[in-house]
Image (tube, rainbow, N blue to C red; front, side):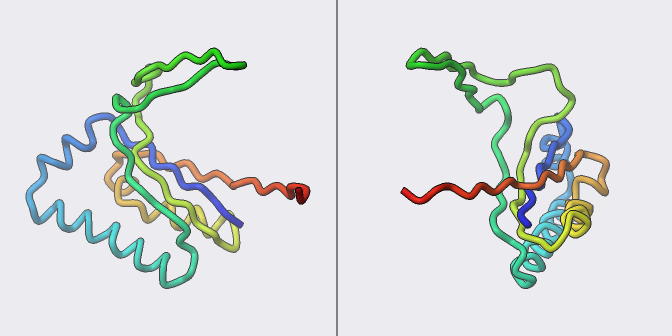
Length: 125
């Protein structure tokens, strides 16, 4: 089953990371590289990306040809959506195990949301 693992990073976490020594930064990046390599090796990796700051986002709302575009940020929150993994795993528990390996969790700089991906059987056209 596919799960989307959403990384909700604390505001200021990227600036804090930038203030780390090169050795500390390399260690954090190595943890991501290890996670990525392990997921690829196990066949569970589907996709994963870091996202730009919420200030660079645009929300599109509307209907029937009338649309409004709003630049971010969008709400008063303590976190921003900083990245994601899309994994194909055997169970919810496995998806949670993967989420626990995201470096920001151990650093107390993020909350990770694990959400099942719905699948639909579309009629053939």
